[in-house]
Length: 303
Image (spheres, rainbow, N blue to C red):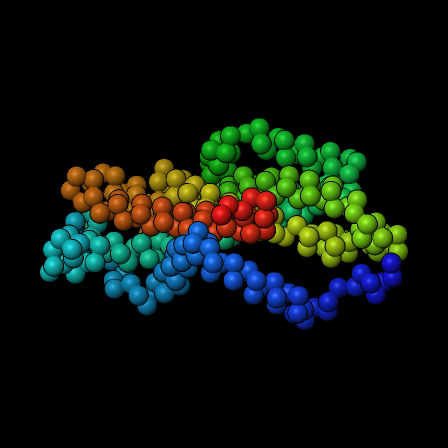
């Protein structure tokens, strides 16, 4: 096989095959009830996060003694708050919109960093083998032997609560998933003819990994990343609920749940609406992830 035969398209050039693949994926999405439902729910969460400064009718941090425990408009038509007010007189609807920014930001960030680090280490372990593979996989085994909540508490105890502390804790918990997945796929792909041919003509290991091995497992990484993002949002809310996550005055869904639990009898909307936002976002991400898995692996597709 010659260099020309294994050459890749130039950077910035979109091949006809790529455009056809995107169109086919969009057609599959529009035909799938599960995929479309997930895409709509995720799209609404992203839209809420992006448009929060424009759409939010009130400041998410402004307090008002007169608006404490204000009822939603569907209970009190004269209320100024669409979904009611909290114990400090802050608008619940505005706080949910701004809370989406924190939850989605940490979800995207953690998933991206964990997938990049884990995929790189998994690819190196599977391709190199030997002592490199042993060291990386023993690190993975050590990581998996520790309960996630214990690891998160250790990291947060050292770094203190906050956005970046939560991001680091969740990244440390998730990178092993990508390392195991990519290592297994690399062990399979490296024995295929086109990889053997690339090595035979003297291509550097780095080029083989980045141009011939990793692109062939992007679908699997994407599916795992989609499902892991739901995990990140849930655990960010859980850690914030326990007081270990993102701290006020930044509005987050987890902190709203933590505050609302003390006022369930007087103002249930303080808990119900942020909990609904978490549930719908996570369900949407999971539905979208399931659809991607079924689409990229036809053997799992259900009719």
